[in-house]
Length: 403
Ligand code: GCO
Ligand code: MG
Image (tube, rainbow, N blue to C red):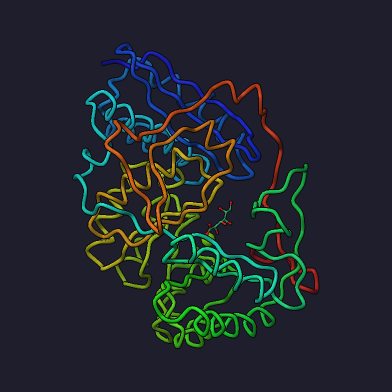
């Protein structure tokens, strides 16, 4: 089998998605997600101007060599733009292999290690009372794991909180980022109170997660982790910006609250010390931003040795194609932990028909070949690209901080 064409598409059903499609002389095609929230067109250019033409004539089964060709072959390695582009190609090739062999991708990754995939979604009220209501509604739907965020008294717009009656979308349309004001002291006072009320109302059985979204220093994260210990979190996510891997030693020596990190990581070199020094419990690298299934299965294998479980980033700013790829990996590896599931709006679900489905707290895959997804190309003209940016954060004195 030979690759005959490869194209990239951008559509915006409520938010931007970048999709790669790889065609073959056997008639089957593969699909990959290349969306990088707020930086979409940089990935489109990288694919269009530098990678896609090099695929023509290649055998799509050679996923390892094609991955190395683009990774090592660029000389300029790593980084989110490069790795999202390579990730989309790799995902599309695994989809193609599955379709060509008429088998789901998970069968190529080791088969099923489980029949259902535990997932969590977000409860994000503007205050504690609204958050409690949202958690109650999710529990009603059967969720066994919920990520709990709430507005912080004294802070206006913060990460993770939707406007009234709208679902949360971090990237805002416009030609420059919105600015938010952040105050760590207020946040640190608020979160333990929030979690106390959650446990009070929902008991110990519910898995409770929380995302600090890179905002703390290691010693602040240590304090938060310690104060949250009585509430037995499933995980505390991104307590600090993780460029400094050794910073996690400071957090780890003070708290037994489990730590989850990795949604902004692109290669194993972003997290090898976190794994081998056992500084985290869950690795959140996702299939698209981490360069595809080829490197993700290697990361999962390294993580398994060090008792670290997988919990791939599954926000709605990756398309259903990426979520499907995460689910195929998640059902196959032994050290699966949990899958984030924000879901997508109805329009995105129509444009990307998919075989995975949610039922009472779990996601399920069928035995559809490949990744079990498709893409409606007419969305490109019906819902064209819209410029949008993730916000940025400043401290009360104007200092630029981590969003
Ligand atoms: C999560 C993430 C997202 C990111 C978003 C940025 O845990 O789901 O933190 O909400 O902020 O993916 O584009
Ligand atoms: Mg996060």
